[in-house]
Image (cartoon, rainbow, N blue to C red; front, top):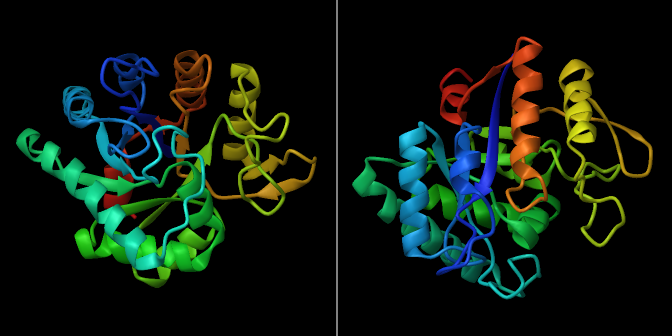
Length: 257
């Protein structure tokens, strides 16, 4: 069993930090970097790319709405052509800063409200795929199993990696439970790890309302801003390796898909 472990990083701004990026970078194999919209700035992006290169971690684009005040978790009304340009803009910023390090973007993982909408709305999903494909058709998509983004990317002939969020509860339809819903954010390391081991063992998950959901998983995400994220990521990695699994970057999974 080979699986990627990733996290959303570079989500500070100016002198403000939100997570121990350097600490988490030593545990994960792929990083989703904020591109300056919901969080991040050129200096933070550059520093995080440097950390990723030093740790041998893949870099992906964590694109979102231009909503620093709401951390990208509020929906913004945009027509689809406008949204496409905002996605390309963020990809260009990250790629431009990565180039001096000899790195390229391996994947894209839309953030917050944009990610939720792309998972549920086919038109938005297709706009995200069009924008990313126009920029670089080799960029893969981190997607929820059974989501509209998965369907849109595959319909366009793009590579997808099925993502499971270690610290988030799921609805019966396979979408994430809204953060406003009690119990939607999982902060207990043991609970998170036990869910993952069950999922890797038989492909099932208990939803927030008690139903059994069957999903695919190739990559596991731990949000860096979840309390105890460092310990959670460390515990997940340890449990998987003890069970005989191999933690490997997205690029290695894609190369053998």
